[in-house]
Image (cartoon, rainbow, N blue to C red; front, side, top):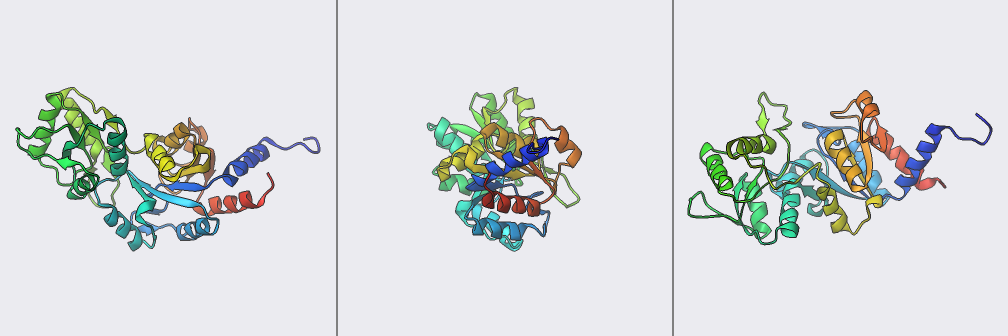
Length: 290
């Protein structure tokens, strides 16, 4: 290499630092990124403290809509992660925003979801219809329903078969758990409804739908280049970030391994072993003249 020339890796690193320098807000995946199950990664709390020192905002993202926001926040606090309600964005929030923006005529919904999800929708001004065949909804909304009964599943299928539009809070087939069971998630429930009716949902909220990050951009008044998405899954976190124009940061503490990251298309902008390394990069980016 000639003197004064930089290697390709050095150029890539410089570009990454330039992009990191302009970051004003970070969207954080939860399980696999901040913790695994009930175990918080040792880099998590120092990384969040660093964001505070650098005055970088944060939003915690989850595709699990089953809990009320205060329940989600209490779960984080039990893990030692302090968060405010305005720092939490779930697939329930994304679904509500989707309906408000694209389908404002929908006010009454038949909801397959937990009491927590129903309460979140009610707080947003939606009315839940009953199981009665005479109580026709404007739409059917399907979520991760831990209280699902066969009777209510059949009622949802009946409304869908009648032509009522329907929506899903998230595409996940199963919810991760360290318990000896398989937690059937929203995507699997939707697959059953599609098989029974021949109709697919009009829209599926949650990751990897870019609208989930656009909701954060709208809330915070940000441009995509000012937002970084940090997660451990290529097909949700990274795909969503790239589709939105946000900085896509992959951490190798969860589902994705280094060899998978190297072959990924679309590729993440930055790959780090842990949040600790990302914190070091953020410090360099804020200090460097690049």
